[in-house]
Length: 427
Image (cartoon, rainbow, N blue to C red):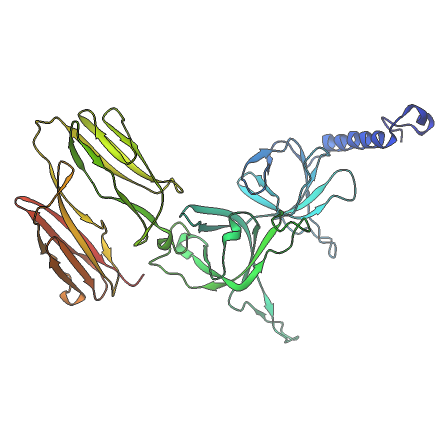
């Protein structure tokens, strides 16, 4: 066959035969792409930077089925071979692709048989859902396989699933390297969730694509077993295990505040992870700087009106607390409110918590005496105990009771406010 660029009878005209052969190969490759029926144009996207989720369409890629070389039968639609044009970046293990609503991971690469490269990919059939250290929700596409064990009985070959062990493969990246032994994950539809736990020695992430680079792209394998779910701490609806443990919240001391024009006040907020106070950076902002301005956690009331002040966790923008601030003319009637600290609505079983009530006048805390009364109804008295000292009351949860909350009324003169607390279980 006569080549487009190189002719052996006229070799003296070609200064670089290697380049000529390559150009001819590229031309033939492009011709096969143009004539092939299995070419996808801008349908499949690839991750440009490893682990960064920045996908870019591939102008042209051929898609071939994977065939079992022992049987000659196609493996299935979950397995595909992507054949790339010569100008496509070199594929590697763990490389991620997006095709429609599905993700695919490279499980094998063929880049030595010709100038064009191909990669065997497998469709991600599930998603790992977990939290990072700041409570951000992580969604990582993964491949989930069930391990089938066979007994030694050669006559019946009974299949034994053991404890429903599973293999999970996913991309080894900055998110998945934080998964630890005994971490739990939830799979399945919300009505039929199944919990799995990573075995203590269930990691297989030590195979590098670059010999001396422990952080080179590759796949991570987890070996997990079926494990119990905790309906009190797991987010069954959204599929996150231990959701309560990573549930961050921000409590702002001044709530529903009223200020006079010209008034200033310090803004204070506390970040909780569950019930534990944690040290996290907070950024404050005002919905209208012309009514209330904020600088260095200090607010200044500038003009009459109502604004929303928000305290946002720097490392997790989804965690924030907000308060409504109303700025009044100086001659306006004072506004009162009663707030509690900590601002919670439950007590865990066998625990006690002290809560302080404070009267606020125009958003400023006042040292007024507060009457605290238990007005609970239809809650067994043997399940809890209330102790009052000054403006502080302590709730002791002796036994959980979820049917009705206990109710505490805090009052000062004709100002009162009622608070409810649920007697929850151990978790």
